[in-house]
Length: 530
Image (cartoon, rainbow, N blue to C red; front, side, top):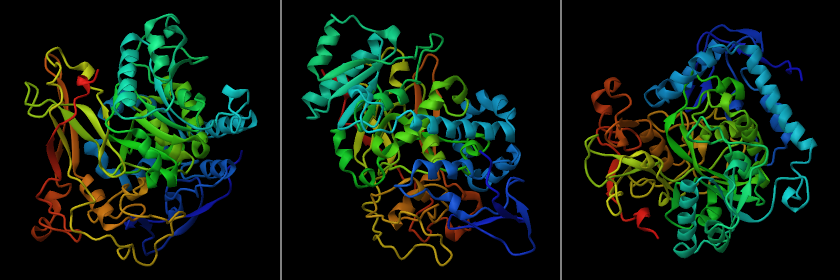
């Protein structure tokens, strides 16, 4: 499909005001779209309306910025918004992928974009979006009702799922049906006691057809999108096997931001590099935002089956797309952005749950990601690093402390109001309904400046959060003969550049000398669950 003959203006330099690109004064010349980055309408920053059709989304995707640009030009454009991500970008992915990124040119990037769009068109033609699910004799994957989806197959992962299901049923009063997807090679004995116990917990094993485990890898992430797509339910809570809810996860179905947007993602510790070609492939200028952690996903396929199918497209060829995403996690975010969609977020950045005391590898050793609900309350305990800690961690002494960002937006003395929005020249957001400070979505935290102005402005509480998160610096330490840990520090992102009077406070009442991080005692020990 040919690119439409869009036009733009080439300018000498570009600046931003309140998250929006402002055309500078001075001479300019017209140029045909496709000759490289220049002044691009701020409309590319915004999602399409929630009820936009697939055809409208694919039209926007095919004609998004970057088609015909040379990759170095797109990277230069990315640096306008993502120069601050360097302290937090995924250095391991950068080292692994640099050679693959370096061979991409404008033609191959356009071909990627076109193949992705045609895949979704083929899926629609095959009936994937029809209401009657394949599990009930139809051709569609939308489904109906609600359920929980896991991916697990070997003895370790299945035993962890059993523990999670026991906890959900016996302690959290969550009775949603569950499905556990596994590779054909992981098919358990149908007469085993494990299969019988799963049935008693209202859970069934589902064999993922047409896929197989990669025996060269200890971890296989590429089944996740398929399990969500092929599950029989319209609304899905996806959980990794090493993930324990701290409260009934069904509560998120009633969260105002999930109800409005139909999907709830949780943040990771890292950010996506400005040099990653995925930005040009999906036609989105680099976003200074946290990457996505996919140990838990809550999604309504009636609104987002297209994004899940696009994620499935990338994870089918996971060996290639993992050069752009560290595992499966950010594939889902990239699919949402490609289709001009947005997602709901927790009311607090991810916390690090760790050992109760200092270790040989450092004072604070976190092995668990603590994810929160829309109000900033603990909801998911994703103990991903715990599995790698050497012997010596034992029952009752595993969890002791959580390092987290102090609760916001509550308790900061700032009143919610809408008088602080950008002045004239602000481009209207297609979906302007923001009910309260907890109704945070992705654009209200992306590309923040010191005053918390982002792609789309939020209340003062949300702006305060966006500004503070610019200084969060997670890092790994330890390993080898000691625990492999995560820790989080905070630093003023512009300490050396601030005048003395600005080092104390800014218009939001932020004290740049005070870290927003706090350490809280743990009262929840998942290993104590039987």
